[in-house]
Image (cartoon, rainbow, N blue to C red; front, side):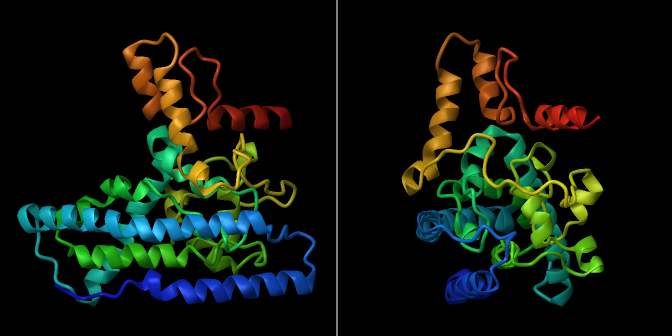
Length: 299
């Protein structure tokens, strides 16, 4: 078995230095478009990140066991650990991430864990650390096809970490735009600011991990508009800095909606798989409804 390092743990000092540099640069330059850090918000994000790392030891053990079970018993091909297999894996992993990320916005069961990352009303490098405590135990299903194809589980875990590491630097307002060719191919701070926006036009857009090409290909790309400044956070913000509440409050809301009141068994189940905002009586509004209302108001 190849022994690849846990690059996320090695990257923690880099995360700390990068946040300090961002704080220094944005404060010294007095950038008017940058909201900056709020102490309680930043510490909540850091607490979520630390919790994710600690729980990650358990969740990653489960993921590895499942990956190895598929790889050892059901793999279709014998893919060697060589340079070209890492190139193939780069695209396969990024494709998997796109669909995981997109479904995490379109299915409330996955949104219940992913909402954590969108719960801050600030956008800086500390926001990148605001990670789920529950998602690691079930969202890996989007990557199950990779060991089935024949990619070694250690390779998959390494590439997943590389993707997560890449996405750290795009959580900033200090960088406006990258060169045009870079913006066309890769996920950037501008693209990801859109993703964190609660503005109707920005909802559920730019689900990219490293490559923005998937959003362009599957119709979920939205450029950042100069006339529409991004408002960060949720459509309905949770208004708490308590890490426990941030981690689990949407789970409580989801099961409360599904189990309370007089509903059919089908409707109770639909509360788990329909998009956030959906209601069985037709009174709810999902992202597409809010976006269409916004577009109609502009006409």
